[in-house]
Picture (tube, one colour):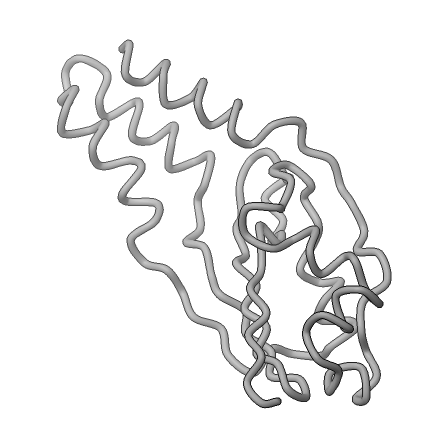
Length: 153
């Protein structure tokens, strides 16, 4: 039961205070996606806000906003091991009779869908947005962070 408590507590702490947030200004014009990375980031500071390590957990920014600006992603790749990696250790460590099954079900219901990588190819960039679904963001697909890779110079 202690392990279950720690998992739930860490989920709350790492997610923080979830609140819906809209993206600020993002590039949409073809010529913007041809700018060098430094110029693009200066013109659109929001890019740095969602980079891994800079992103604020709990923003709950819907991925629908990116789809409205950039269209349907070129690729969507599912990360299949994420949710079982959270729930299965609780089940196997604590067992069926002492709450492990209950703990595993609780963790799985908090994050019921596997996270995904939404990838857009825009101009000189490949934009890989890591998208998740959890209880703290009303089970709506939201952007956790992204990585902008410059594909051409």
